[in-house]
Length: 596
Image 1 (cartoon, rainbow, N blue to C red):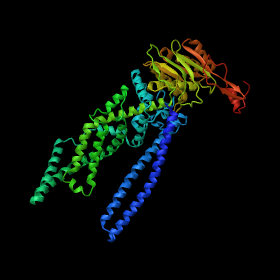
Image 2 (cartoon, rainbow, N blue to C red):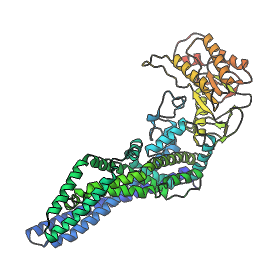
Image 3 (cartoon, rainbow, N blue to C red):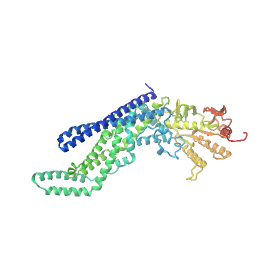
Image 4 (tube, rainbow, N blue to C red):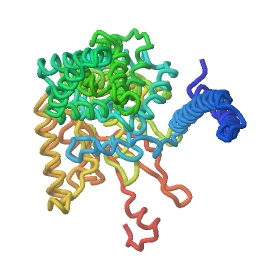
């Protein structure tokens, strides 16, 4: 089996060749279309002048219609090939670590008050969401974002693993859904669509529907009597009754027609995605249930949606000058409005399930694409243990390019509950916190993780890596930090246990208060069953590790000077750091400082 890079490259070349071929045919058909139109115009002019009979126009009309149909088909194929080229270009960009800025960044999911979303770069430019998401519907994006922000239960994670594994090599399906979703993404407004589908009926009067059918039947009968027997009065009486009924309920009828017509387009677009799923046969239990959820209405969503689409087209018939006189006595608007209400009554409650199923499938598809593109990443193992566990071997950060990524082992189990990480500036302390946090998020979302292996119990995650002050709220950074730490301390009282990631704890205050405050907070968190990592560049704070041993273990990152430049290896080492590079860095950028 070719690797993802070769497979994407081969498919990209095929799609480019298809796009070129369709573009060339498009150019030729454009000329043919122009020529057939010119011939048609010339024949019509000759017929108008009497040189030819109007029958001569039939051939050019048929030829023009055929060329126009073929041209439209080729244009659609060319545009589909162009979108497929974009799909594989984005896939190769992810493989080459050049994906930042090429995908949906999920800014609307950003939440500064969330205990870790901002700290771990889940959303925004170059975020985890942008790396993972190939969702094309808002429902898919919403589902994936919710999984990243809320850890799943172990049983659910296991089901997602099986589903991702089932989807791993279904590249044709991912491409088909992505191509179908190109238009869906611009059209489907999930919450508003569900609100319309589940709202109370506007034409709930059974007598009104019966009356409309009866009057339409009477109109046909009295029209026949008028034609055969010249009885006009009964027909006029029926038409008058129809007019009274229609104008009495005209606002409701028009509201039903216009709202259903608008949402029919959204559902029609969604049907393209659903149709892709209906063709597949799955083995993973979760995917099987999603298929059953789609078929719960007694028919496939695509067929049900086509019914509403057909009703919308039938409503548009009345705008035809030939059909309009027929539509009026048949109360066409009223009949179609009741049919649309009947559709909503039968299928409206299922629309939410259709959207949820499509959203979950797209979230699983995004995780499977990540797994396919990173075959070295492994599924984590959720363990059942009386105390919190996080044991990762050769862990890396998925947002760091492979060429620059350095892997480290992190083990929080047994007596070790906390790693106190010291080290110089830029040595990798904060990156390690983010590495642990992001892999914990991936693990509990059901995705593969960037590690040779990862064993963990269910964990709540909390971090203080991007705490900021707020001018609008009048809060300093220190106040924002202690507020977040208090929230994490409260979170540690609940279940599951807390995994805390505290960066430069209390560095906004003086050394004495920082030492006393940090020691108290860490004792409290450990006592409440939490595990975590804390970074500091204050060498005095490393004494806390000695005081709380063996629960707290000192580790560090170091550096060295080489050819007048500071070098880092980003490898975590045992024990506290013994020196600082701050003075050296100041001198390296040209600041005049005294002797250290």
